[in-house]
Image 1 (cartoon, rainbow, N blue to C red):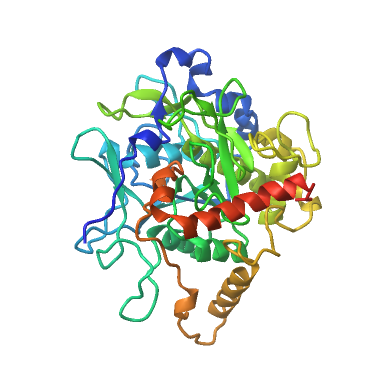
Image 2 (cartoon, helix red, strand yellow):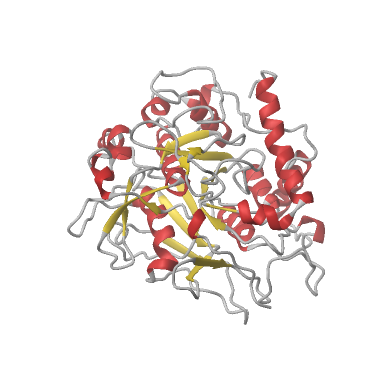
Length: 447
């Protein structure tokens, strides 16, 4: 079967901005300078001892700024039509530029080849890298296609395999593997309507923080950013403003990238990025939620290093209670920046173990949420059973992770085309999740 693919040029996170913005963006390193990352690293806080899983496209570990970083490439969960597994590593710019720059936001070594040194916010962290999306140049030579087939060479769908098991998506497999491999934090800069709810439930059950990039066009969030308990990340720039949705041709004028799913805003606009279509040694400024998400994940890793006893729930509590420049405060939400701009120095100043060990983003009462409490309880039981020395039966089909036949992952969380094709049932679920969050805040719900 030929994979269903979409052109992604209009929704790509990594949109180059004019070079004239370099002065305003402090050479593209404003996220590092204003975030006071160097001060933290000078104090020995660089994410050491913390494991971050990055799930993205293929990656080029030998690109300037990433080579020598110790990136641990764990493998690929994407297959071609023959069932052959794609390699997680590629030197092709179209295939690997997105994942390479996402990883560099965490591990950037400061190496530069005739350009600006790209510095990661948590270069001491262990970063496990998983490929769950393949990007290729479309036949027209301009657009980018994406695909990630199952092991049987077919499009991700809800059909059962010959063994009666659901075949989980590459994203779901990657998240599950990251949990099994000991990740403390999972950063996903992809989005769509590929189901990974059971894998996210497994992460919640294991006490792993999951961050997902919001779409670069406002509206209904996609998966995994709109999943229950997930930190959905917005992007803002050196002027302190969130990004504008300039990718939707239906909009006469660009508009703020507002979302009912946003949790926090993180630096993501006018960021220095490595590589162009001409050369990996070249650089450009790029923008999008895909760059904002790993920066937020790296900040959490640095906080986890300083406060190793903090649980994932307490890290999220600290994340939303120490935003901006006003110090510790009660969380206040809006659909622009969520609970506010992530603040590394703010979080480092407060011991998160004083906060309740409860995920403030989690809705345990909504049985229609994805995932819901029952699913997390099921995954917790499976984790407990797998840790037991006694032999355990294989999971039932109900514990698998299905996907949608017409919903490939999109870079940067783009979802508009997938929503239009999926139609009423899936869209209703996404809208229910978004509306629930909005209504809770309108009622003054304490998160």
